[in-house]
Length: 244
Image 1 (cartoon, rainbow, N blue to C red):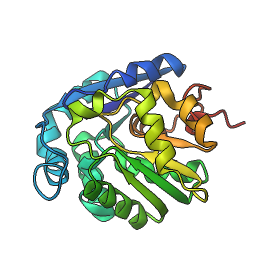
Image 2 (cartoon, one colour):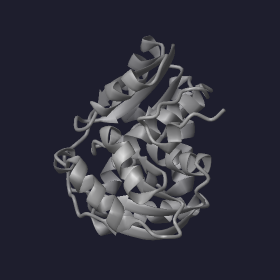
Image 3 (tube, rainbow, N blue to C red):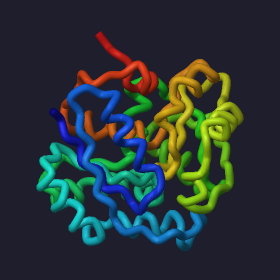
Image 4 (cartoon, rainbow, N blue to C red):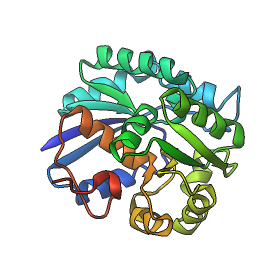
């Protein structure tokens, strides 16, 4: 059994994680909820900047101790905005600090997107962001800093995690289709407050390419850190496809 530890801000779409547990053999996902203010996802105040502040080592210390006691083999800060707002170098420093404090391999959802895109062979991507435009553009710039080519960005204008959590599969599919670019090798869907795990086969089938979503990428990144390379499922998209 491989245990991945997640530090998840607030409450929104965390039920995606037990769904993934049922689809992945020998994988346990331990979720610790950290404090998070329900503030608009707008720049510069309250949204990206506030999310980055929520991801500081001091704010996450209690959660890290709980994850250590759970037997976690790696820890992931399960907030996309909480890392990309710091830029690529800032996000790298954030996870280095987290690893030192936790005594475990560490990463974040945002950093995981860069690794996951490379894993599915997607150097050129499109972004389907539930965020307001300025936050979506910030995520695109983050990916560019990470070495990816962002060909298109679509923003849905959602301001809060509570609103994101109310989206259904039809709205997700509409956003992914609208964001897709014919030359993009994958579509990236940030925001861990958005339920996506149950819709991955449908959205990938609709656009005919890998669709990487925040909660899916978060667990995959934790497994990558734990060096668990054999976890796969037909229901979790191209990122979790069997690779013989």
